[in-house]
Length: 86
Image 1 (tube, rainbow, N blue to C red):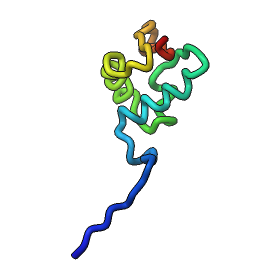
Image 2: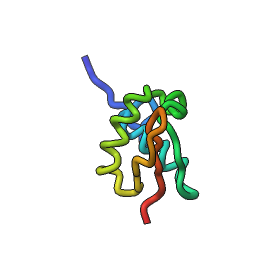
Image 3: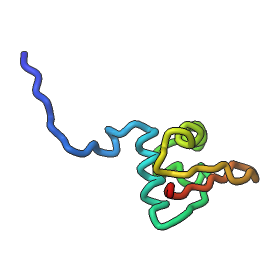
């Protein structure tokens, strides 16, 4: 039995980790400036639950050096503010 490697330069959306998928989405949406969002409104676009997004946002706030992430407000759900780092 032989194993073959499938060389690929860019992972597809399904191959990215949940954290990387969310980070990529945020980078694309915030590239022209700041953005504000609630997890429940982007959940379908990133194929994650609002709860997963909330947990990942806390992690990304510390690890994603190319983004500035703030918990902005809370009115029925957390609003996040994201902008590219200077």
